[in-house]
Length: 161
Length: 120
Image (spheres, rainbow over the protein chains, first blue to last red):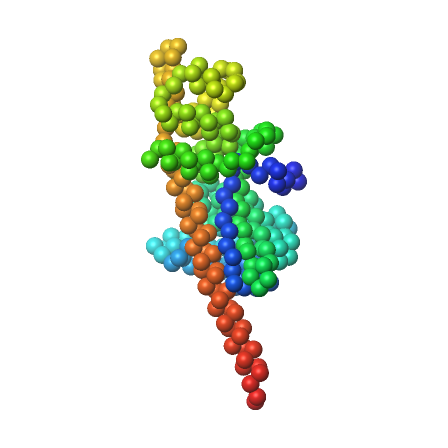
């Protein structure tokens, strides 16, 4: 992965951003986010559980988790740590197989960046998912990408309904 | 829906001209010539964008010679929207659970501190 892709000015067409503020100090949120013992307690939608989780928390290290749905189906989550800034930022590159669009949180060919921002005793977590595609490079070379495809999609959706 | 067709849809939507073309097609079928007009780009450039949209299944083109009208196909867009909704649900609900878990951890911590302070 080239450094160029991290340039925020390229923030482009294929991304989803989800944000949440927790009433907890940043060090604790970081711990809950990175320690498999803690991760297994909350990762996944309501009613899901996790059978196992391994995290080699260093750049190039692997992350894996097996998420179990209430109906018994298992959903693997697989990725590699692209970047780690202790208590501040963690970047995953998904290594999910194509058959699992959501990838239990890390969709195939996506890069997921999680940032932890301190707000006194509270912490804002921002989860940013970017989908890589063959045409993304080409797209990044062009200007005027302030509108995300998510917004575009919503607008189109409004038209279609 | 496969991740492959999803990524085709996303790639097709990544371009503002293509999004504008789709928006125009919402109002009905249009010929390539009419479609090119407001974009100040050449008909061959528009044709190139149409090919990307067609490959992603976002539009179809009529077979009538000359005219070949473009038509919006809603299915891949709806599938992409469904995917986004599921993905958001995954994280919104995970973050709900994390919120509850953090509260639990902090309550536990307080309890431990109190215990330590108690005279033996």
